[in-house]
Image 1 (cartoon, rainbow, N blue to C red):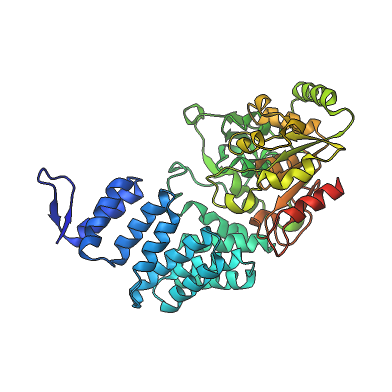
Image 2 (cartoon, helix red, strand yellow):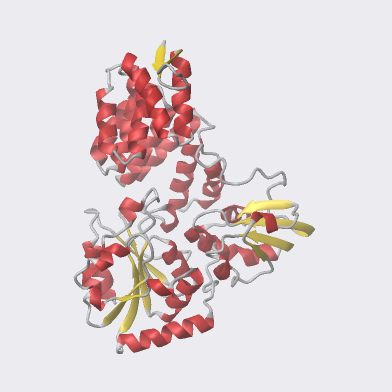
Amino acid sequence: MVSAPQHSPHGGTQMKLADALKRAQAHFAKGEFDQAERFAAAILARHPKHAQAVQVAAGVLEKRGQREAAVTLLRGSLTGQPSDALALMNLCRLLRVLGRLDEARAAGERAVALGALPEALVDLADTLGALGEFAGERALLERAVAKRPALARAHLGLAQALLADGEFAPGWMEYEWRYKLPSTQDVLPKFKQPQWNGMRLTDSKLLIVAEQGYGDCFQFGRYLPLVSERAKHVFLGVGPEIAPVLKTVGGNFVCHERWEHIPPFDYQITLSSLPLVFGTTVETIPSKVPYLYADAAKAAVWRAKLSAASGGRRTVGFVWQGRPSHPNDRIRSVPLGHLSRLIEHDGVLPVSLQVGAGREQLAQHPLKARVFDAAEGLKDFSDTAALISALDCVVTIDSAIAHLTGALGRPGFVMLPKVAEWRWMRERGDSPWYPTLQLVRQGPDARWDGVVRHIVERL
């Protein structure tokens, strides 16, 4: 029996170990971390190395930002028995997030060697991918899918590996698993209407959901004109932040920014499933740019402001920080100090496109007086698109700004980490999605200084 201090006027309720564990896991899944911690602690007080209770307790520490403490807890729970597989798998993931890749690999290999958890293959694969060992990553993901065909994480990891390698046909098929993860199953409504398969719709109404991040919506918005060739009545469910920009894409569709305003429809599909429907290969990507357009009046206002401030210098917009909650933000964002070489360039007016997180770095930068900070004038992506269209060039990390710049057909440099997301593929200096963008990748040392130096030389 386990004492868990919950629902009792006497300070505790005696319950079976299995029930306490279920409650701990249920509270954790709901984000109720204090309650999850209490039940896990009650279990660990009686069973200090209970693998699943340790997993919950370590998960709570991680959610609170105490990753090192979580690593210590997991290491301390190891017994040398097969039951260590769960702790070793979580160690592999945590150490990878912390950037301690060699330690992560060692933990992952030990977890896989125990053979109990197909999920451990995925965590080790992710670590090999972070190390740039792509062949090993893919082999492990193939094994994971074969061992557990319903494991969504393995399918999605395999999708990203295939797409990065340019194997689009199987990659798009595997990419359909992205909403079968425990964390994404409830992202979309449970549609009763069937998913559209690309057939011509003579009278039926089609709903397209712009469901992913802003950059994804800009990337896949290029397919909307193609949809209009096959369906007469198309509704696009899209957020208000990007609706004004996506409305500029060619094609016949009506935007709706709230679910309750969407009229009845017969078929549905997500925007990011359209590459599958259209059978997109590397060679057939709809890459004619621009396919998004800026508001001409807003762009004229920005041009006047930049002309007055630039004194004849080239105007270069730049972005250094992504959304902190993005799983890859630690490796994709560039500390502003690394961009000093660009800011101090005498032939350039550096224009900050940074909004939200990261702006505090500009306030603390010794060269901040040289920067034209445009943030106050950027209320939505329509404003940003107008500013980008008025600039000579954009330098950005892998963010929505990179996709918007490319979709507008504007010249830009994208600063990429050594291991970039699948959409930038492997080792390319150009993008088949965006002909006007140049990709500048970190070298084997995974440093940003060389990336910035290379861009400034090209400028």
